[in-house]
Image 1 (cartoon, rainbow, N blue to C red):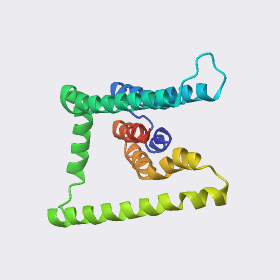
Image 2 (image 1 turned 90 degrees about the vertical axis):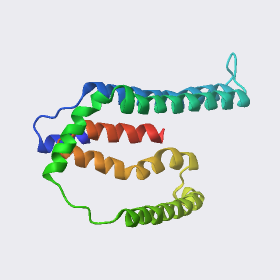
Image 3 (image 1 turned 60 degrees about the vertical axis):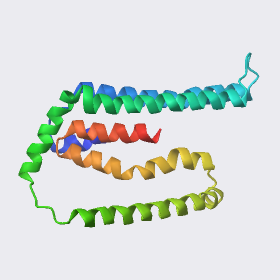
Length: 189
C-alpha cells in the first residue's frame, strides 16, 4: 500500500535498500520463528518417523522466542549505535520537513504525560473488553479463536501503524514508511 499511495503523489520514490533489506530479513526471521514450532507441532499429530512430544515443542517455541527477542534487541542496537549513519539521511529529511512545518508546542510536559497515562489506562480497559468478548464473537461468527487471535486482532491492532505508513509514503518518506510497516509486522509476529 505504501508504494501505491506514495506513487500517486510522487512519480519517483526513493528508499535506502540497506534499511529495507534489514527490516525484511527480520520479518523473514519472525515468520520462520512461527513456522518452526508449528512444523514440529504438526509432527506430533501425524504418524511421522520421529514425532516430537509436546514438552519438546514448548522448548523449541521458547528457544525461538528468545532468539527472536535477541534479534530485535540487536536490530535496535544496530540502528541506534553501530550503524547510526544509515539512519542519518532519513533523519535529515525529517528535520528539513519539520523546519518547514515548525509549530510551537501547544501542551506542557505534565499535561502530555497525564494524557499518555489516561490513554494507557483506556487502552488497557479496551483490550480487556476485547479479550473478554473474543469467545462470544468466535461463537457468533463461527470463527475459531485461533484465527481471530492470529489474523484479525493483529490487523486491527496495527491499523494505526498501517495508516501512518501510507501517510508518510504519500509525503515521500519511503524509508520511514517501510520502517513503520515492516517494524509493526515484526512486532506482531
